[in-house]
Amino acid sequence: MIRIRDIDKTPDLLKALEDEKERILSLVGAFLEDQIKKTISHGRAEWPPLSPETIKRKGSSKPLLDTGHLRDSITHKVEGNAVKVGVFGEEAIIAAVHEFGTTRAGRGHKVVIPARPFIRPTFDENIQEVEKIVGREVEKVIRRL
Image 1 (tube, rainbow, N blue to C red):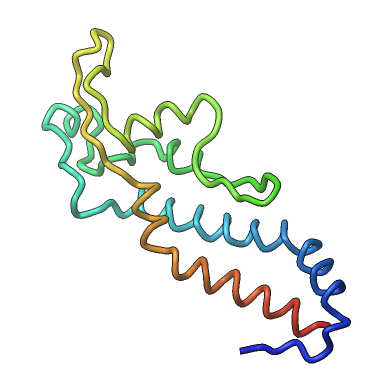
Image 2: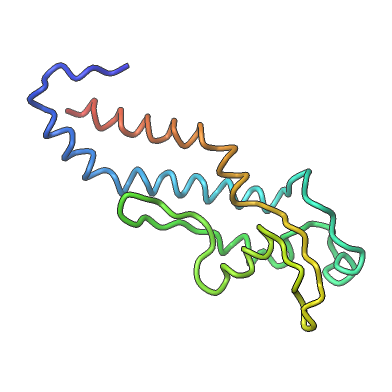
């Protein structure tokens, strides 16, 4: 536990934390981005397997990993007091289809793609590590004062 001994430094601490906010959020975003990419690369045990037709077409039984484009689209951005991690722009539709599933894929809108969540579970499983990153970085700011 860190104790602030000089209460007169509180305004300095608040200013320092504000100055470091974007850097800290970016560290969190980069960490979660990396974890989500690992989830896509390694898969999750609870994901339904690909259909035999899909395996034949793509030559692999790995869900969400064909060309690597979805995985490579994962990024993060800091906006104000938040960091957003995921897929942005046009690629977000593809990510959403895989995250939540759909019953209306394909040219005739008759292909069913089951949900294979990769963003939310990764975040949920790493929340304690995110808290550690933030705590460690805030502690560094406090110690500098």
